[in-house]
Image (cartoon, rainbow, N blue to C red):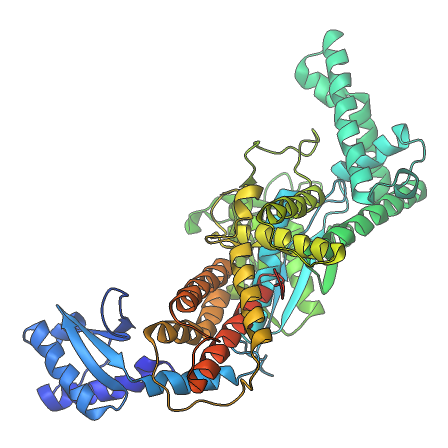
Length: 592
């Protein structure tokens, strides 16, 4: 139980006894680090009920609490703030409970709790994953893990964009220029091979546009009349008509891409419980539009197209079905959301991990689903995130200037190797152990650098800056974890004895306070869909632990109880680091 819950009743009783006034709420906050105390009562809100000097009110209340609550050891007053020093026995007892709690900070799902579906990744099958996909995957995966840790069942899903003109462009280019090459014959991952033909299509398309302009066409005419584009459009129509040859080619090349994606996901350490495919969902939603028309949610224009008017909600009019009866993306997304509830009836909400350029789309989608009367539509959330830039600048897929996800992961491992070798910390490691460690450090640095930032903010990602063994970085936290494992390995005594009567050093108390916060941080991060809260909490815990480590001896102390307690404290800190980092998809090494 949080300390303010243990003080609240006594504080209210004190005000009633001193002033004969019942107070509905006492405001508590953590004591600022530059003042003596553990928790602070803010007196200013009490002035609405009690007339008097804030300093005098705080002093009288402090005296009452000290006399009537064994947790309060002493107090001091700074202006309108009553700072309370809490007795060591509270923190020692609290730590003993924390130490013996398995999976501390994590809740198990309750039977009657509705589950949550988290969608992330959702790539196109015409190119490999890139840097933007890395942020998307890391965010979606971490949010799913955090929600699960908060006590809800979670389904991880993606919708794979496996149809459309962009897919046909890669297929056509391979058909024209590929000479039958395959991932096996080239040694390339399937997604990379297919991506190369997407780039090849764009090169041919631009060359044909230039030729047409040279023959007297306007640029706009040339863009529409380029033969290779017309062929791709024809291929899409053939696909939609079920042409066997086109479908066979589509299945073959998509499978190459899926195999490539799966390798990338494995390297990145993310996974999915279920996949949806746009080729199966693109017709969904039409029946919902017909139903919405009959209910007056949608209206039909003279040309036969169907719209919804959202101007009263501060948005605009939005098309949901074209005049020719074909669906738009919004129609599909409406239908897919409803289909997911049918597939998983225990879902009570969904999280969509999609870049911030789609903010408006999701506002409209959620509003339409609410207007259609779906109660679960109240629990839809767009996990919107900003772009990721590298110092070298922006990325463009069709021009082949994208920062490839696989290449970036390899670069991170290489950078970790260079920095680790410069520091010379790995004497006595086998080459295999070193390589595994470089990968753990490199990917940990990448994930932490991206996840410590609020999702909505744009990131300039600098690989070298992310792999720093000092400061708010993944390697700094991993190094602290490894250091604690070294302490535990060296402990030549039984560290499992419970120490009950113990006088705390202020640095020990600081660490215990941070440990106490972990369950609340997990719940808050789940509520706010924010891995950044977990990342930055872990950094604060590690800072407090390192301050403790540098101030007091652990294994070198003579008092046996101190030695056991400080080793236990270290061990639990490492356990919480490991738990917190598991929520971010980051591994921790036992040695560094």
